[in-house]
Image (tube, rainbow, N blue to C red):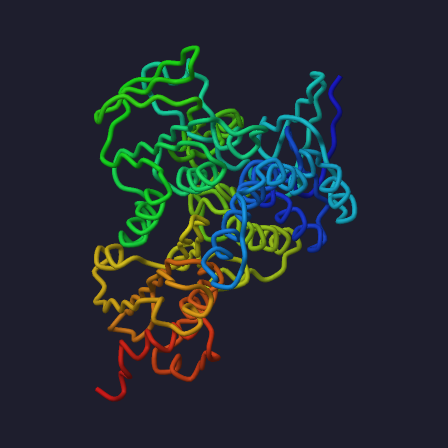
Length: 473
């Protein structure tokens, strides 16, 4: 027997993106149901952002302490304690707290696998086979996230490799770990497991961290190598075989053996089993949207977060979710819609103001366009570089501070359009750059944003000094 219910909005996916869509819609006056087949709180809470950073932070603290004269540090990481702390951040993979939050926010939860079954219709199938048919008066929002890619490499699937989920939820540390991939997940997990004592080998088809400035990836690779991590760049993985000893990986650079294998070769939108064919869309592909996150060609279907492929980052998905939840409520209630660039109901920042941090050692923090991307768009730019180790606040934070900063200026408009920082604890620098880019603050005006001395933020003054006052030219 199928239960039936009609509500204003149905959200498929109760990760942080879906939760935010639902929360904003409820605050806008809409009756909302959220459908989730796994844990409420999604990938970020249990297998990505939170557990991965919990695994990485202890080694970062230990490294900082060792770099400070006068601080006595003995011994290595207590790996068992690190894993226990990680477990606390995932609530031991229980979503009771998240479910309580949904209830407090006035969001109803339906457990089950949600699939589109018609226009403004979602059918949720529970583990016991029972179904609930949900009809939306106004909209359906898809927030199902993404799934890890598994490259078509002979023997790879049969070898049962780890994905990011198994890596971040590991209960023990393998003696050796091979990683296929050179992006954020690959390098963060290489950093973590190397700090736990694993012998780590990273196999990369091209170069590491291909989406950021090349100097950033080079510094991270150099640091990992100094910690004993083998990084094979421009290397193809030809085949994989699991045996009693672990895994044997044949590559274009030779044979790699390891106790365990992690595949971190990117992610794809989770749309393969969403029922898209029921509403005239192709399953398995990203759902293209306008800046209000409404799916192209639809008046009622929205796609928010990783599933639309705009920016596969939790914070950016939550940003989209706030716009989507608000605009769905506005349209449903007949209120004005502010869909001009940078308006209340759009995700304009997705195009050229997306911040990202890679929590390796050193960290990489970046926002906006790289120099190559800006040139590819035909922009006239100036690239300003500065050694972060020359900034007083950085050198005070640890001896022999190694870091770099880059600012990209659009010379035609006199505004910053990109920034990259590499070094210990640079994550907190990127929001100032994001604010300047989103606000399109003229370089002349940035001269009046005085950084306190001695802090690492003094890098802004140094970058501006390197650039020179435009008005004095």
